[in-house]
Length: 602
Image 1: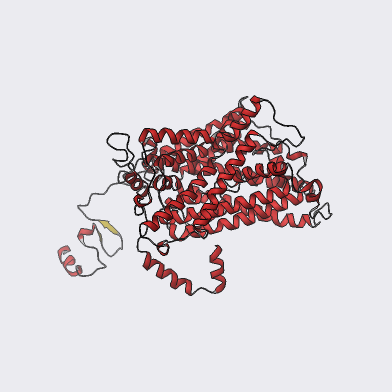
Image 2: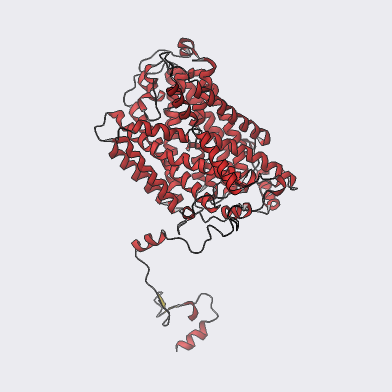
């Protein structure tokens, strides 16, 4: 009977065959196992969680041949292939990338450290410096976007330095960037603990350090999707806070606050628009550059984005709005509402919310309660930067390991696409934050800040130089600009502007390091020991980067990459450019004029 049934229903595609392993018996609509099928019970939830941390056996993370047979020859081709084939999970969506671009670098650099800029240089210096650094960052991120859309590889800008400049410089830049984020985690966790003291909390800072570390590490153990969702929420809160402050600032400046009285531009006249002259302006350039740190995370996330060709250009273009709206407009209002000689700005640090010009402006207006809301936003911003620090350092370490430029253990990628060993290592360094409860806190964090101080300047300058060299190789190897999926709006000229501006910031930092600006009370740093400490606190990153570069150069005898020899094929996500661009042109032709204008900037 069963045999007849099989014969009758064999031609029906809706009926399962015996080979399928299940049949529908007795008209009950319930699929039953075939009688000789071997079924295995599904593992328990704890077992599945444990298994997710195991290395994925189907992927090849660090291929053989990255280092030559003699142990001293760097194989650039194998390194490029390793970063292109990285098994990192590609789960970031367009909305994640856009919010990382819009709110990723909005943190204590804007909310708190801008008070130091205002105190050192005055409101005009703040406006000039942040605007010019913003232009430099716009050019830099455009260049990064062009390369990251074409080569969405693990490690992003450090991998580009290896591919387009010199493997030794790529090694130096990778470790420079990894060190920056490894150091930033304990710094930001301590900053978050200190912000709680705004409400005169009697709880030990160590307790808050433990709480914040647990939150940040847990988010990153959820993988790139967890990081993306957390940054999405954090960025929305920060954006709403800045937009709200802009609206409030306009109202306060025209006399709409509880205390009344038109303010206008009176603080630009008394005490004045500039403070400490040209040197004051130079010191603000340095602080402004630090405030924009993290902007380049958009490029680092490209390797874990589901469709970087569509989402990355949009995210890159939105950096313009973040610079124009969130930094330039908000800090212009801060300069109108807070005089640079306000005593609360003296000695402002990146963790003291009481020295935030945003909080001071609200207090001056006589609005009660809102300063506490702004302090909560500052604490969220600090946690956001701490969250990004584990993400940035772990992905950079994984990419370095895949290229043979870091211990192989950092290339361990588990079955959920997480660089697990790198995440654990970065999280472990976060426990340095418990120094907040010791008597060595000030010295320890002074030098950790010095390690990360100029990291972003080197990173941005290298991105611009990579783009210049990439464009030259692209042209020399017979490619045209029409074959680029996304083209930098600033072009090669913008990359030259970005590169030279980063050099100028290094020069300005050197000058203010050997001859610091006077304090607000007119006192100066004097004495050989004090001046030496001040210089290395500002410039320690430079000798460390040069040491990394020179040692690796001598050890592996790497050579500068020539344009005709650069690898422009490995790691390209999509190759059929003509068909893809024809589809896009057809789609753009149907857009109304308002949408074409909007897409030009967004």
